Structures are given as C-alpha cells and as structure tokens.
Image (cartoon, rainbow, N blue to C red; front, side, top):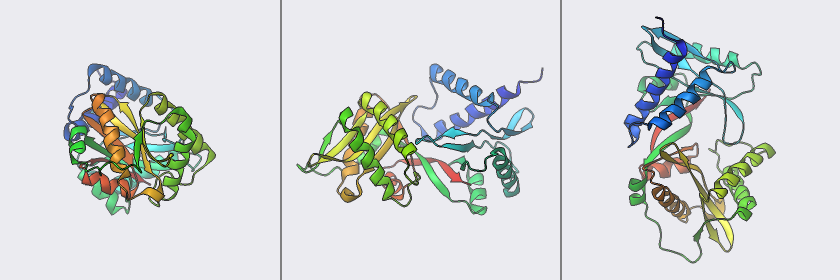
Length: 298
C-alpha cells in the first residue's frame, strides 16, 4: 500500500524537530499531548492550499521539503521556509532553483522570504554562505539554571528597581520598545508603523494579563522590559529591550534574572528566544545561550 504523502512529509517534519531537541534541549522528547498538538499543526499546514510545498522522495524518505507563509511577531505576512535535507548531493544550484521556485509562489512579489537552517546542518549553512547569504536573525536556546548561575547582576541600586508592571503601563512599554528598536541598526523590526504598534500592544495585553512581564524602573519611568511565555515544555523570551539612554548599566542582566526566576517557578528547564540584534546576540554568547536555528533573508 502506497504511503500517504502528507504522512511522509509529517514524519520528516517531526524527525527534524526531534533532531533539534536531541542536540539542544534538556527534555529530548515531547509529551504525548504536545506531540499531538504539533502533528495537528503540521497537518493543517500541509493541507493548506495557500502553502508552497516542494519535496523529493527516495524510498519513501523525504530529501527536501519547504513549507511557507506565516505571520511575524508584528503581524506581517512573510514566507518562512523550513528546510529538511536527509540525503547527500544537495548543491548550491539545487538550492538556487528552490529559492526561485519559492519566490514564484508569491504572486504579489512583495512578501519577504526567509529560509531557516538548523545550526547542525553544516552543509546547508555552507551552501547559503557560498550563495552570498548572511544570517538575518537567530533562534537561541539556553538552560534556565545554567544561565541564572552565569548572571553577575550588579548590587541593588536605588536608581534601578525591578517591578511587575500593571496594565496601565502598556503605552510606556510599547513606546520604550519602539525607541529601543529604532536605535538599533541590526534590529529586524525595521521601520515602525501603526500596524506594528497595534500588534505590539496586543502582545503586551496578553503578557500583562498573565503577569509575565518584568520591567526596570528609574525615577518612576520604565527603562527596560522582558516578557516571558511558555512554548510547549519550554520557556520563551517574547521580547527584551532596554531604552537606549540607559544601556550599559546592567539593566538587561536585571531583566534576565527576574525573567528566568519566573521561568524557574513555572518549572521550565530550557528557554528559547529570537533575535537579530548584535547586542542581544553578543550577550547571549556570554551567558551560554546557543544558536540552534539560522534564519536567512533571501
């Protein structure tokens, strides 16, 4: 009996996720409940006619596959491609062809295109480099206890105080994040817009309702914030920012410590995050947060 194509693709998708977990996460396998959630999501993507799919089969094994189209943190439509390569022989030419095919999928010619590659997929990373592509952003993973042990937080200062902000702080939080992104040349947020601000407000409402935002105040003004959320069995940093006027004062360390303590209370062992900014990436290396996914803008 010929296997169902979607089941073959689904198996490949799950295998790729599990490969990442084995290499970078403490909890190597998903719970049964989480595994079912992921399968439901993957099948909804595979069954959607609005998604581009390309694949090659070798003995019912997937050697190449791309799934596309999603929303960013700020509500923008992008083409986000997860690549799965399980066979030798993938070349720069085949990748160039694949990129051309994906671009043709977007009839508007306006959607930004991204390709995600696992940090362990060295052949694919070399191909992307040979084609002249540099990583545009990174997905990071760290262990909660390990990072907490590495944080050297400055002594308590009356000038900087860690707080749990209230819902009334939403405007201050959004404007502070806007200022931080606009001052950072490597921020992937790009030009601020009313749409991005509306999405930012929506996320902060959710985080504040769940009491999962920590902030630092100075003279009754919020100068930095970090939002914590749960993604399956992991913690996740939804956002972290420090106002440009106060950077270099150890504020990010205070935010990390407070945020990770919240994760510890929730019994999260690993935590993930996403960044494009050089400052966040450099500090992440210091506290042993590792890159597990490279995102290339094509």
